Amino acid sequence: MYHAKLRGASPAHADYELHVAHDLDALAPWRAGWERLWRADPEADLYLSWPWLGRVLAAHPGRWRVYLLTEPGGGPVRCILPLHADMSQARTNDPAEAILRPAGRLAIAEYTGLLCDPDHLGPAIEAMARSLAAQPWRAFTMNYMPALERAERLMAAFSALGFRCKRLENRDNGGATDLLICPQAALADDFEAYLMGLSRSRRQKIRRAIRSHVETGEIRLTLSDLADPERDYDRLLDLWQSRWRAEKSESRLDRAMRRQRHMFRICHAAGVLHIPILWHRDRPVAGIALIENARRGALVVKLIGRDPTLADLQVGLLLHALTIDWAIGRGTRIYDFGHGDEAYKFSFGSDPVPLMRFVVKPPRQA
Image (cartoon, rainbow, N blue to C red):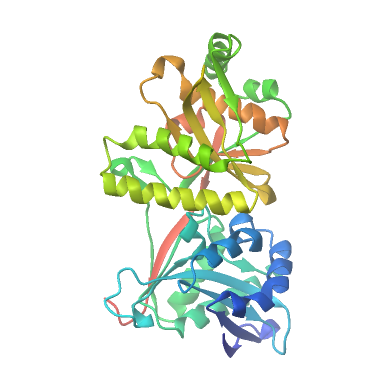
């Protein structure tokens, strides 16, 4: 554990102490302070919570650093920034070669950021930037950060120190899909009321598909088998792989499937994973991994797999419609389609939520 005193830019909160934890033993004494700050921070969600992120850190020893700012003399924790020290592109083991990324991305977190006491927002973020500026690293990147004001404050604080900051895009499908947009559908109190908020054509299409395929017993939806979650992982990943096999190499598919399974296991251990599976008679034809972000009242779509040969059964439409019906029944307020502004997501009544991606580099770098 590294400790340092840090003078703030604001006279209202002139001093902070910096603590840097590199392992769980050093981080453990800060758990109570972490959880108090998480409860006090209106921007906090699942991906910065101790129950979820603590499991991610435990699964990746030696690959992360957690920066904590406290008030002097053992005062409260005011800001926490968990980072992955990525050495995959380093030529040596020198810490100055590290690229600092959000630690949650070690388990493919949908959202990233930092915890901060709202009463200390400006000075604490400035102090955190000065803390990072004094550490050795090659680049500092943030991706999928929903707290846009905090992202802008971080960039401004680094810029004031002479660091080079650049806001970045994040696109897929040849540039057609903006991964920094997360479509989110606000859900009604019942499924019928939700449907009435959609376009007339979309509403009719969903109702016809339910009458034709669900009410006849041809299609049904089942939920995660908590007693044997690996079986659900296998079903979903097999469906996902069948969709992408023609477009990705075997090595890329294998690497992606290992990362997804790792994420599933962490989320299952944290009690936040749901895997609805759509069946055509006795055959699984589509599935979806949902992460429960209870602080937001949201279910976040993390991964979808479906049999691409069954377009006539409208499995994609039914998968989302039946899952939304189930989500409404359990009191979910937001159905979050995850990264990407594909048009079909907005047909379910979604609004776009923008995210931020940026990179910071030391002044000496060109």
